Length: 54
Image (cartoon, rainbow, N blue to C red; front, side, top):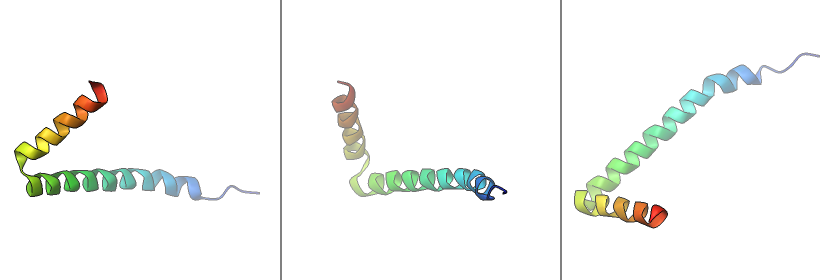
């Protein structure tokens, strides 16, 4: 009995999936930045960091 050929497909698809996620995150960041402006966006980031670590 042979193993299915799923492992090579997953090995090739993982970098593509990670790249797609990175592109979506960067796009969302730029969209929010454009919508809310620099000051509000950076203040939101600062508040989130302070909440997590402060």
